[in-house]
Length: 398
Image (cartoon, rainbow, N blue to C red; front, top):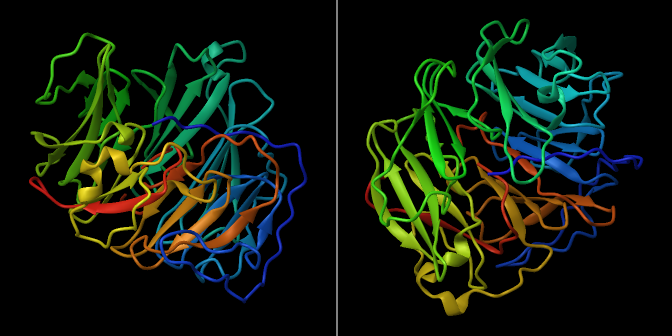
């Protein structure tokens, strides 16, 4: 999973209070003509429920508590969001917004205890001014509760390298301690000690809060040379017991995608099935003991808990997905979820993905990088190549 964010030099405008909902079309996204508009692409989003969500669009942080009918700007005063930024909220109203500014190696962290009505800001010089690791291309956060969190800083390097640094806090972000990070990708922790990160060909696990990492091998279905396997970041349920991960294996002539699951917090993994190669860029999303998967197919959306035969029919997958298709997804309940489209607008579903309704429409011009999804607060995953359909998967291991 690649985490990216970008600064936009365009002005940000949001029109709120549009109570009229856009029409909803079965099997695809609805017309966006009546949805609130933003001038500044949605670069990250997250949600706690079908009603409570947030979006970082351009240089403004927005929140909704009515499913996207109305939005309220909750950007901390005088906080610059032109560079890499990350945001998350918890159910108790706690929230954090982290941003890299113009000062080399410095991270500004804004914390709230009331859902964004009031903020307390602190600046942390996490890197020496001349430290290359402090030149960030992206940052990501995860919080287990209002005191325990992690901040991953990905170093600005060429596309051939993935380098980064991890920081941990046990006091709500007042102080940060430097940890190890094998690569520059985001982390997912299921407890204060146990966490995971995926570095391309290798899956890593820590059992000491990120101080040390070990290579975690899976019962791989094939034997490919070093560098020919890519691991997605695993996803776990809120209890940290059930998890799922997809692994892509490539040879000179073919590409295979396998799904593995765990029921014991990652102590053991079981190969579940092989998916279509067209799903090699698709993120897996966890909710309760099931998994949602973005699917680049042209077939109707599936209901929760219905096995999806469309994954077995490669001929059913279109070569090009429409721009209004969901490209990054977050499920917060069996039927409720949020997504960002390939053109940078925010969608919402309440029927398991059969229909998507626009709730924020991007009015800026392309190109746009993928949106970053904050799944940690909801106990849920990831950037994705454009995809048109979703399906809930059930099988051995769930």
